[in-house]
Length: 209
Image (cartoon, rainbow, N blue to C red; front, top):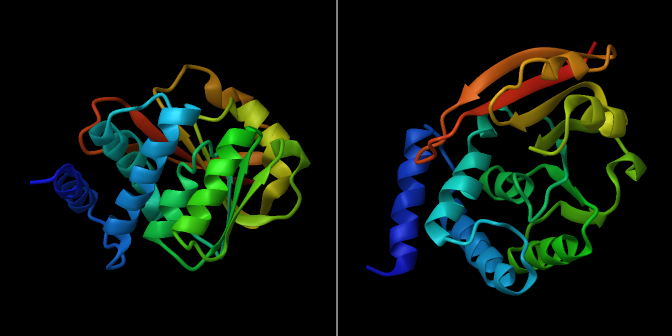
Protein backbone atom coordinates (compact mmCIF):
# COMPACT_ATOMS: atom_id res chain seq x y z
CA UNK A 1 0.00 0.00 0.00
CA UNK A 2 1.45 3.37 -1.00
CA UNK A 3 1.48 6.42 1.25
CA UNK A 4 -1.20 7.94 -0.99
CA UNK A 5 -3.40 4.85 -0.53
CA UNK A 6 -3.04 5.13 3.24
CA UNK A 7 -3.93 8.82 3.20
CA UNK A 8 -6.90 8.12 0.92
CA UNK A 9 -8.23 5.46 3.28
CA UNK A 10 -7.79 7.84 6.22
CA UNK A 11 -9.58 10.67 4.39
CA UNK A 12 -12.42 8.46 3.14
CA UNK A 13 -12.97 7.10 6.65
CA UNK A 14 -13.07 10.64 8.03
CA UNK A 15 -15.53 11.80 5.36
CA UNK A 16 -17.77 8.84 6.24
CA UNK A 17 -17.58 9.68 9.96
CA UNK A 18 -18.56 13.27 9.16
CA UNK A 19 -21.51 11.82 7.17
CA UNK A 20 -20.61 13.89 4.11
CA UNK A 21 -21.41 13.12 0.50
CA UNK A 22 -18.68 14.57 -1.75
CA UNK A 23 -18.42 14.78 -5.56
CA UNK A 24 -16.81 11.77 -7.26
CA UNK A 25 -13.34 13.29 -7.70
CA UNK A 26 -13.23 15.25 -4.45
CA UNK A 27 -11.14 12.85 -2.34
CA UNK A 28 -8.51 12.52 -5.06
CA UNK A 29 -8.39 16.30 -5.58
CA UNK A 30 -8.15 16.96 -1.84
CA UNK A 31 -5.14 14.64 -1.74
CA UNK A 32 -3.64 16.47 -4.75
CA UNK A 33 -4.02 19.69 -2.75
CA UNK A 34 -2.44 18.11 0.33
CA UNK A 35 0.51 16.84 -1.76
CA UNK A 36 1.01 20.30 -3.30
CA UNK A 37 0.89 21.92 0.14
CA UNK A 38 3.38 19.41 1.51
CA UNK A 39 5.76 20.09 -1.38
CA UNK A 40 5.58 23.88 -1.07
CA UNK A 41 5.72 23.70 2.71
CA UNK A 42 9.19 22.17 2.58
CA UNK A 43 10.51 25.37 0.98
CA UNK A 44 8.13 28.11 2.13
CA UNK A 45 6.98 27.06 5.62
CA UNK A 46 3.27 27.68 4.95
CA UNK A 47 1.99 25.59 7.86
CA UNK A 48 3.46 24.20 11.08
CA UNK A 49 1.87 20.83 10.27
CA UNK A 50 4.46 18.76 8.40
CA UNK A 51 3.25 15.18 8.68
CA UNK A 52 1.03 14.06 5.77
CA UNK A 53 -1.35 12.06 7.95
CA UNK A 54 -1.68 15.00 10.33
CA UNK A 55 -2.43 17.28 7.36
CA UNK A 56 -5.37 15.04 6.45
CA UNK A 57 -6.75 15.38 9.99
CA UNK A 58 -5.83 18.93 10.96
CA UNK A 59 -6.32 20.58 7.56
CA UNK A 60 -8.64 18.54 5.35
CA UNK A 61 -11.05 16.96 7.85
CA UNK A 62 -11.02 20.00 10.13
CA UNK A 63 -12.09 22.17 7.18
CA UNK A 64 -14.64 19.63 5.93
CA UNK A 65 -16.32 19.56 9.36
CA UNK A 66 -17.97 22.94 8.65
CA UNK A 67 -19.24 21.97 5.18
CA UNK A 68 -22.87 21.28 6.27
CA UNK A 69 -23.10 24.86 7.53
CA UNK A 70 -21.77 26.60 4.41
CA UNK A 71 -24.44 28.32 2.31
CA UNK A 72 -24.95 30.86 -0.46
CA UNK A 73 -23.46 31.48 -3.89
CA UNK A 74 -20.44 33.54 -2.75
CA UNK A 75 -17.89 32.97 0.00
CA UNK A 76 -14.92 34.90 1.38
CA UNK A 77 -12.30 33.05 3.44
CA UNK A 78 -10.42 35.54 5.61
CA UNK A 79 -6.88 34.85 6.81
CA UNK A 80 -7.02 31.72 4.67
CA UNK A 81 -3.29 30.92 5.00
CA UNK A 82 -2.60 28.07 2.57
CA UNK A 83 -6.33 27.81 1.72
CA UNK A 84 -8.01 26.59 4.88
CA UNK A 85 -10.90 26.11 4.80
CA UNK A 86 -11.43 27.90 1.45
CA UNK A 87 -9.69 25.56 -0.99
CA UNK A 88 -11.02 22.48 0.80
CA UNK A 89 -14.57 23.85 0.54
CA UNK A 90 -14.04 24.75 -3.14
CA UNK A 91 -13.09 21.13 -3.90
CA UNK A 92 -15.74 19.53 -1.68
CA UNK A 93 -18.64 21.74 -2.81
CA UNK A 94 -17.80 23.32 -6.17
CA UNK A 95 -20.00 25.89 -7.87
CA UNK A 96 -19.75 28.97 -5.68
CA UNK A 97 -17.55 32.04 -6.18
CA UNK A 98 -14.81 31.99 -3.52
CA UNK A 99 -12.38 34.75 -2.56
CA UNK A 100 -9.32 33.70 -0.56
CA UNK A 101 -7.81 36.56 1.45
CA UNK A 102 -4.40 36.63 3.12
CA UNK A 103 -1.81 39.34 3.73
CA UNK A 104 1.17 36.97 3.39
CA UNK A 105 2.71 37.06 -0.09
CA UNK A 106 4.19 33.53 0.05
CA UNK A 107 0.84 32.07 1.01
CA UNK A 108 -0.99 33.93 -1.75
CA UNK A 109 1.57 32.73 -4.33
CA UNK A 110 0.87 29.18 -3.17
CA UNK A 111 -2.90 29.79 -3.35
CA UNK A 112 -2.64 31.01 -6.95
CA UNK A 113 -0.58 27.97 -7.92
CA UNK A 114 -3.08 25.66 -6.19
CA UNK A 115 -6.01 27.34 -7.99
CA UNK A 116 -4.18 26.89 -11.31
CA UNK A 117 -2.94 23.33 -10.71
CA UNK A 118 -6.24 22.07 -9.32
CA UNK A 119 -8.30 23.98 -11.93
CA UNK A 120 -10.54 25.55 -9.30
CA UNK A 121 -13.18 27.48 -11.24
CA UNK A 122 -14.60 30.55 -9.58
CA UNK A 123 -11.84 30.72 -6.95
CA UNK A 124 -9.41 33.62 -6.70
CA UNK A 125 -6.79 34.72 -4.19
CA UNK A 126 -5.96 38.27 -3.14
CA UNK A 127 -3.06 39.54 -1.06
CA UNK A 128 -4.63 42.13 1.19
CA UNK A 129 -5.46 43.13 4.70
CA UNK A 130 -9.04 42.12 5.47
CA UNK A 131 -10.16 45.71 6.09
CA UNK A 132 -9.11 46.71 2.56
CA UNK A 133 -11.12 44.00 0.76
CA UNK A 134 -14.22 45.15 -1.13
CA UNK A 135 -17.46 43.33 -1.91
CA UNK A 136 -20.15 41.44 -0.03
CA UNK A 137 -20.48 37.70 0.41
CA UNK A 138 -23.29 35.32 1.38
CA UNK A 139 -20.90 33.38 3.59
CA UNK A 140 -17.68 34.45 5.33
CA UNK A 141 -15.33 31.90 6.90
CA UNK A 142 -12.46 32.50 9.29
CA UNK A 143 -10.39 29.75 10.92
CA UNK A 144 -8.64 30.66 14.19
CA UNK A 145 -8.12 34.07 12.63
CA UNK A 146 -8.58 36.69 15.38
CA UNK A 147 -10.79 37.67 18.29
CA UNK A 148 -14.46 38.26 17.48
CA UNK A 149 -14.01 41.99 18.06
CA UNK A 150 -11.10 42.24 15.60
CA UNK A 151 -12.49 39.77 13.09
CA UNK A 152 -15.86 41.52 12.77
CA UNK A 153 -14.35 44.97 13.16
CA UNK A 154 -11.99 44.40 10.22
CA UNK A 155 -14.20 42.24 8.02
CA UNK A 156 -17.82 42.82 9.05
CA UNK A 157 -18.45 44.97 5.95
CA UNK A 158 -17.91 41.87 3.79
CA UNK A 159 -21.01 40.05 5.03
CA UNK A 160 -24.02 40.51 2.76
CA UNK A 161 -27.46 41.22 4.28
CA UNK A 162 -28.91 37.87 5.36
CA UNK A 163 -25.50 36.22 5.09
CA UNK A 164 -23.78 34.03 7.68
CA UNK A 165 -20.35 34.29 9.25
CA UNK A 166 -18.71 30.97 10.18
CA UNK A 167 -15.99 31.43 12.80
CA UNK A 168 -13.92 28.29 13.43
CA UNK A 169 -12.60 28.30 16.97
CA UNK A 170 -10.84 26.08 19.47
CA UNK A 171 -11.66 25.86 23.15
CA UNK A 172 -13.95 28.65 24.30
CA UNK A 173 -12.43 31.30 26.50
CA UNK A 174 -14.85 32.73 29.04
CA UNK A 175 -15.68 36.21 27.81
CA UNK A 176 -14.71 35.85 24.15
CA UNK A 177 -18.27 36.28 22.88
CA UNK A 178 -18.61 39.56 24.78
CA UNK A 179 -16.39 41.08 22.07
CA UNK A 180 -19.00 40.54 19.34
CA UNK A 181 -20.03 44.03 18.10
CA UNK A 182 -23.66 45.03 18.73
CA UNK A 183 -24.30 45.06 14.98
CA UNK A 184 -23.83 41.27 14.94
CA UNK A 185 -25.59 38.45 16.73
CA UNK A 186 -24.52 34.87 17.53
CA UNK A 187 -27.08 32.61 15.88
CA UNK A 188 -25.70 29.18 16.76
CA UNK A 189 -22.70 27.50 18.31
CA UNK A 190 -21.79 23.96 17.27
CA UNK A 191 -19.26 21.62 18.85
CA UNK A 192 -17.44 19.94 15.96
CA UNK A 193 -16.02 16.46 16.24
CA UNK A 194 -13.15 16.14 13.78
CA UNK A 195 -12.26 12.48 13.11
CA UNK A 196 -8.82 11.68 14.53
CA UNK A 197 -8.44 15.03 16.28
CA UNK A 198 -8.33 14.95 20.07
CA UNK A 199 -8.98 18.66 20.56
CA UNK A 200 -12.05 20.79 21.07
CA UNK A 201 -13.38 22.50 17.96
CA UNK A 202 -16.29 24.91 17.79
CA UNK A 203 -18.13 26.66 15.01
CA UNK A 204 -19.74 29.97 15.91
CA UNK A 205 -22.38 31.10 13.41
CA UNK A 206 -23.02 34.85 13.34
CA UNK A 207 -25.23 37.16 11.35
CA UNK A 208 -26.25 40.81 11.20
CA UNK A 209 -28.29 41.91 14.21
